Image (cartoon, rainbow, N blue to C red; front, top):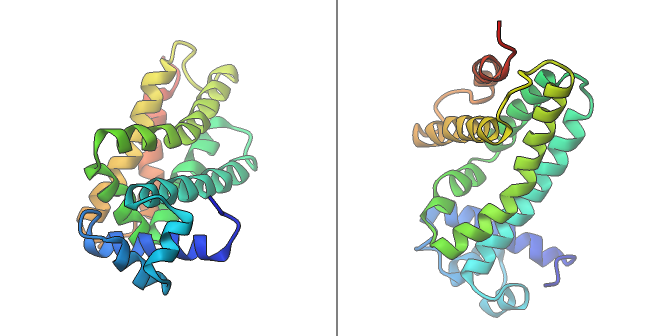
Amino acid sequence: MKTQKPKYKQIIDAAVITIAENGYHQSQVSKIAKQAGVADGTIYLYFKNKEDILISLFREKMGQFIVSLEKVIKSKNKASDKLLLLIENHFRILSEDHYLATVTQLELRQTNKVLRLKINEILKGYLKLVDHILIAGIEDGEFDKNLDIRLARQMIFGTIDETVTTWVMNEYKYDLVQLAPRVHQLIIHGCGKRG
């Protein structure tokens, strides 16, 4: 795959818009090509098929997402502060791109099992970032030493994910980023030290 060429990014960005506006199943390669301003055949120079576009789109966007989150959370020492920044930036990135939010929260959920497995594989980088925050919090005594990291990770990701999905389903009517401190508080109370 020739990921270095500008048309690759152009097609990925066009796919986000096309899939958000039409839904994954109604987004033919020809619609994506039209949105990207390229010939249909050009798509096949970069992608095998529509599923490959969706997986590449998620890999590309999630990769950028993880890199930006890693940079931001390095600025904090406390695990709870890192977690707040992770939540705020997760919300901010998606609130600044409604098309991407619609694709990640709605369209990626409607895919087949093989696609879901590939998407879950890409998601592992994000989940590792959450794990690092949790481990640091346990080691520093900020979080309960008996915290079940796997369960806590699921709780954190699930809470963040469902909060964004609800916001998308409500047609972006409220400020998602403003919810970050409240979501953070709920999670911190779940991860905090006992009595």
